[in-house]
Image (cartoon, helix red, strand yellow):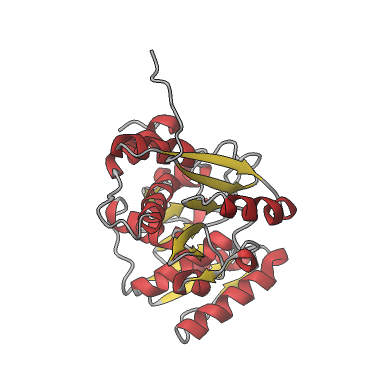
Length: 298
């Protein structure tokens, strides 16, 4: 018999804001972590658009939620609603984690930190001193790009659709302001992708291509890949995107998106517990929970 969950006045509340969130694994992952740690806490998803966020966020703040995550399409739109944004959040221009710092609701970005940690831990690849090619320039892309710049990559080439040229140029400009000359290449023409794949071993997809309804699509022509490429996808549902399957067929080392998802969650928990240094996340149970829900063999 499943143990009944009881809520008390001391229960801490956490949540996820965005749309869509119904298929997010964050609730399962964080609730499993809370249970493992014996915390009187619960994490719930809230499906809201920008207009709804302007109403629900003040309500959650007044209820003193301990921490929140923010996903698309709110990562940039939530910023004006915060008391503060920390250095990493300001650098990325997008936040995915809200936490309390000295009584002020503060935004940060744990996507990029999670990606670099996953790249090193599970990908076995240190990006320091290496060039990379990144597809996409949205909120997640910004987090990943600035974390890679901090990790010491020599250059970041950004590729994407012509319709996203404005976002690409903005990200490139912000990256170059952070680290002079790190982003010299911006491509919106697929004819340029072959040369870029030859110039960059590390290839990262930060777009939603590969998610439903685009399950049979890839952000570029994967026949151009070579076995020396390390191919990463931040999409984690499905965990075996067509991009990753095609890359593996070419002999490439790959990194599935669920590893970034796990590590950004670990970092989010650390931020929520910033005033309780003894609270350590159970990374093993968080990993096991995500992999079980995705049907990944351990």
